[in-house]
Amino acid sequence: MRIVVLLAMLTAVASAQPSMSPAPGSTTAAPPSGSTTAAPPSSGSDVPPAPAPPAAKTPRELCAEAMNQDPTFAQSILATLGKNVDQEIVKAHEDANYHVQKNERHVILAYAAMWVIAAAFVMFLWRRQQALKAEIAVLRRDLEAAAKEAK
Figure 1 (tube, rainbow, N blue to C red):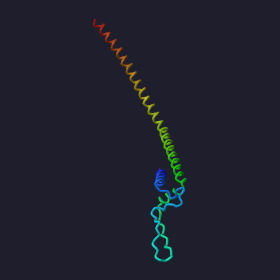
Figure 2 (cartoon, rainbow, N blue to C red; figure 1 turned 135 degrees about the vertical axis):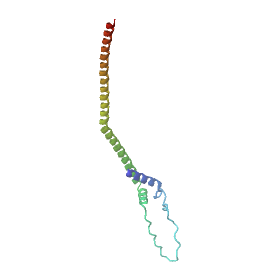
Figure 3 (cartoon, one colour; figure 1 turned 45 degrees about the vertical axis):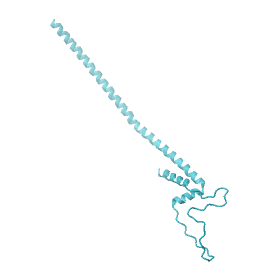
Figure 4 (cartoon, one colour; figure 1 turned 60 degrees about the vertical axis):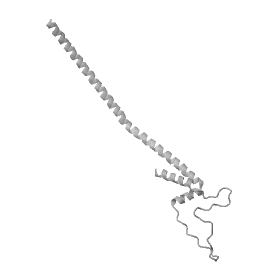
C-alpha cells in the first residue's frame, strides 16, 4: 500500500512540475526557477566570479527532474501503479474467497444443526400429540363406561 501512495505522490509531483525542456521550435530554454539571467556587476577585472556552490536537492526535486527529463518515466510509473493496484485487488478478492470458503463449512454446519433441531422438535410434538390422542381415547372410554353405569 505504501508503494501505491508513493507512486501516486510521484505522479502528482510530475504533473505539477513545469517541464525543463525547451518547447518544440524554440531556440532558447527558459531559465530554471530561482535563477537569474542578469550578470553580477563587474569589479573592473576580467576574472570571472567563482560559481556558487549548488544547493542540495531533495529527493522529491531529484525525482521531478528525472521525470521531466524522461517522459517515458512518468508513463512507466503510471503503468506500474496500475499493475500494483490490479494485483492488490486480485489479492483482496482471493483473500475474501478463501475466507468465504473457510467459513462456508461453518455456515453449512449451522444450517444442518438448525434442521436437526427443527426435525427433533417436530418429532417431539408428533409424539406428544399421539400421547394426547391416546389419553383422550382412554378418557372417552371411561366417560362412556361411567355414563352407562349411571343409566
